[in-house]
Image (cartoon, rainbow, N blue to C red; front, top):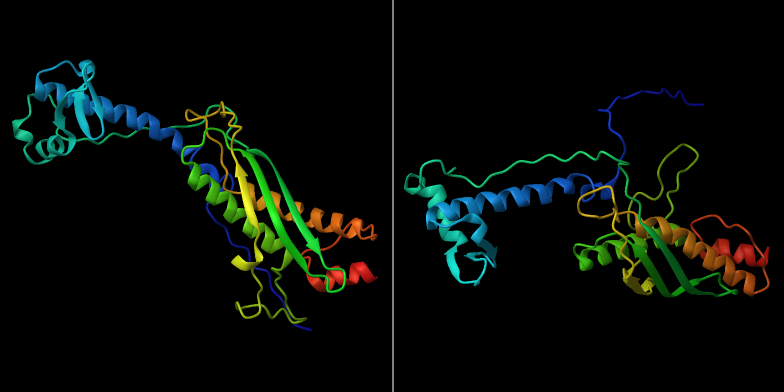
Length: 262
């Protein structure tokens, strides 16, 4: 036998490890900073143009008249004046466009998404091979700022979950030596293994706990896909006359074949 010793390490305390907390949490400071910076820019523009700030607006990188839309000043030219020729500014005008705002959630600090995932697949009873045919995701991520990024993030999470469900497996020998240490031994899903996806965000229920109304969506695809895929495999096996209530992940062809023929 080998002698094992346990070592305890301490890390800085934090509440949790949450990938999607960046938008609902710290993202709450972004709109506050944006509004404050906009006010500073219009105040400086008003001083330089001898106009009331509330009569000006910012559109397409320009300071314009809020009523007529007529261009009054280019933002790039204005920034060059502020930073490189600050001596030309009227008295009392701050020669920088930097603001800092802080945001701390005062209510429940978590914003959970709600969604559903469905998987259509086929199981070959003779070989145990699982072929994915189509995949659907409907996810309520609150207010979606960038639909393309949200869709791709969910698709990536679904791929990760499919890998966990069907092929990814960490194997050690009796001595604890990792046997699947390279991509030659550790199976991961390839593009040719994946189905087509339909991702829908037509339902957007704003979160009431942050100014943007957003919800974290980082783990949405990865959490829902393993049970969706495994349940689809069990359903396919059930339709083939084998009523099995559980099968371990990864649902490899060998495990499916053993379950079908056991």
